[in-house]
Length: 105
Image (cartoon, rainbow, N blue to C red; front, side, top):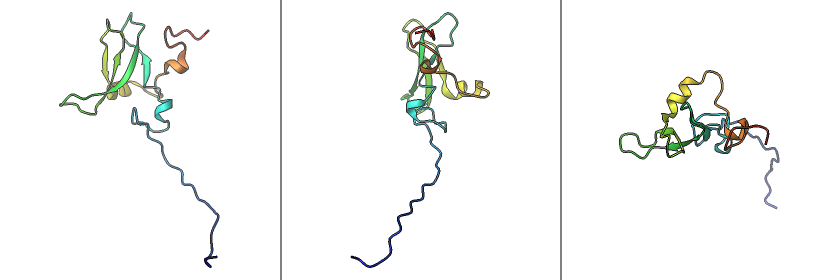
């Protein structure tokens, strides 16, 4: 009808995916290994959740905090990232049971 030529070839460029949760590339927020990690406080078997600060002096800064009310463990995400040498921590989804860490159930 309209006369011109129409190309059916579609070019898809490769893009780097930045995680909306931790800001790292190579995974999406659904796959982010930092969303839930084991608490690092000795003797605590809780899980740390990745959150974003709303405090005036640190708005938008990401941090990890234990979800157990008796623990109160806290760590800035950039500090946790600086301690990781080659790969991010294993999340509960990869590293075993969310509640206890066991890989047999």
